Image (cartoon, rainbow, N blue to C red):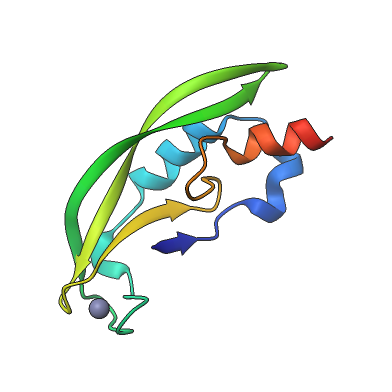
Length: 104
Ligand SMILES: [Zn+2]
């Protein structure tokens, strides 16, 4: 799994949804720029596959359900990795916004 730290420290200032931030991040994603977390090779990943997963957001005081498309990349070493920006919690349906607003 490749984790991309893109927003967590800015969470309190962002007035958006996890889904829109995810879409914005993925629009700028370039698989060829990734480094493999297994072998460490740079610029060796290409898009391999994708899968859908559910994401629960928290917008205007209510839970909102989304489906997002997670990209998997494959390295020249043969390992595959899901690409998850830090607003997506691995193995969890709840987005960062949902968890953040639930705790505040
Ligand atoms: Zn590799």
